[in-house]
Amino acid sequence: LGAPDAGGLLKDLLVPAVTHMLDSLDHVLIGVRDLDVASCAYTALLGLEPSWRGAHRAGGTANTLYRLENTYVELIAPSGEGPDGELLAAWLDARDEGLVGIAFGTPDAELCRRELAERGLEPGAIEESRGIDTATGAVREWRRVPLPIARTRGVLLFAIEHRSAADRLPLAT
Image 1 (cartoon, rainbow, N blue to C red):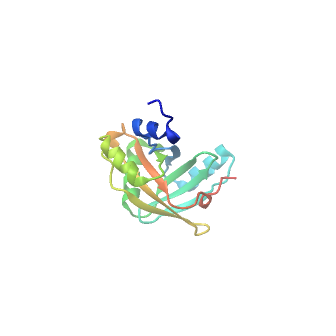
Image 2 (cartoon, helix red, strand yellow):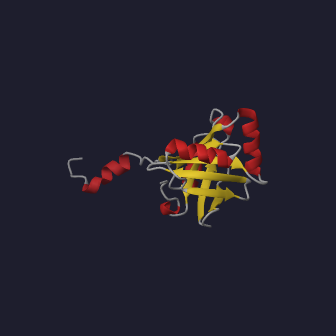
Image 3 (tube, one colour):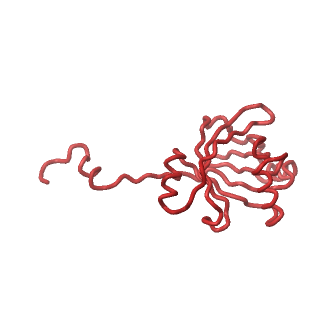
């Protein structure tokens, strides 16, 4: 023990590495019935034009995003047919418009899912998703790790690993 520790190796062996599977508040989701009306209201509230107006065609939802410096706000509405749109419509019928969920950022969806499972939180399967900006045709892709609402006190929570470059979602101006 009197010998110097070469590069902190002894510390690395004795202290387990701390992983931060959830490293940020990625965004908040606000459920709305009429996306155009809600987008006008949030444009006035934030004093910013949306960063993105998109569709999740396979899921049956449409959204408007406002990217801020450290997070973004997602207005999301049912649109067309799909499982997410049906779930959101039922949510809105039961609870009305407002905060629907919170997304936490993760650098690694697989590691995140594994660690959430080890903590007994019963995460769902990783979902590969994509969104298309209806104005520009730009595409964003991500991986989502959902948690059952029964384990999150009635709040939709999920981890998100963005697969597209951050500049795919420009700052709201």
